[in-house]
Image 1 (tube, helix red, strand yellow):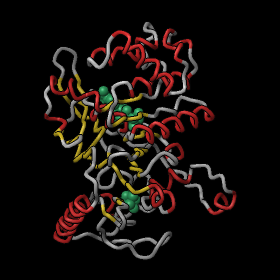
Image 2 (cartoon, rainbow, N blue to C red):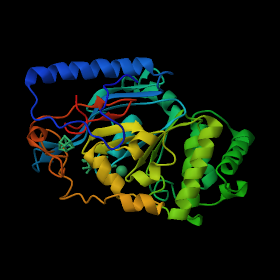
Image 3 (cartoon, protein in one colour):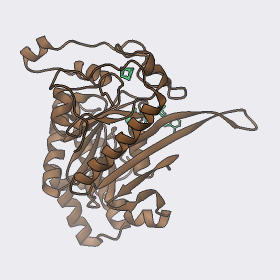
Length: 370
Ligand SMILES: Nc1ncnc2c1ncn2[C@@H]1O[C@H](COP(=O)(O)OP(=O)(O)O)[C@@H](O)[C@H]1O
Ligand code: SF4
Ligand SMILES: [Mg+2]
């Protein structure tokens, strides 16, 4: 990727900026856009998913007889990223930062407020409901809660068979064969198709959720905190299963999690979200070894390190204050109310996403100099 050079290697920081003049800022933004465009062009192959300036606001209404909109929940407020064929993009941030909303809007379970998405070359939001029904099988989602996401009145066989039946993929004996094969693929017994969801453990239920997502042979699976509700030992089993399936079927994942530890092994790249915006995005090695954004640094400082030497070197950063409301997010950089490095410019101007080298993107006036 093309990018502005950063001074020094790991640990060194770009110099702080005292103030940003409006004209130099416009020039800087033009330069950032040109670099981003060049980066997209240089990187091959073409991404499977391109998300550009995606926004999802929910209206806040008041009044009993005549409801009127008084504000908006800015759940997702202009995010852009790409996901390449066969990779896993980790999407990480504290609860309420807009991760699930992003997933639901990508799935078109909800319509966006604005923004563009291209999925496998198709302008995804321009598809009519009829066109979407035909294409929806290509993008699937696995939810956090493996219990409530499975219909308790249906057998596992019915849960797995229904989407294949509806999409005309298989009927009769062939459908039964596919159901049994899917159960085996996710490490369950073929006889499990006759049982109901409540007869399974949390980890097994999540395997059923994964099998259901796989049933339609998708290109992309959005995994919305798929292991957060599971015991740590079971989490590892489900993550290993997902990794094996990705290798076997060439799947592409967007893996949503609220902490950086969970996505560490499975992700190729990681995007960090704060209050509806992506603040840092990089390949896994760069992000974990050299986090730039103070928010990423704080998240990472909370991740347990197995190596005692690393533990001694790492300083735990406690974030002060609560996450601000997405109804009235802070001006300028949204993180300024909790950032230990905040200065005047941070309150006034929104930092642009800058490629600091090698495709490591960061939005921070102090850590990513334009
Ligand atoms: N249907 C909705 N109506 C109003 N606000 C919503 C709705 N869904 C989510 N939100 C709000 O949007 C913000 C982001 O939510 P969500 O995407 O679920 O975050 P995350 O998955 O990162 O925890 C939260 O403040 C949440 O309360
Ligand atoms: S731009 Fe934001 S993250 Fe960076 S120093 Fe300022 S307040 Fe902190
Ligand atoms: Mg969520």
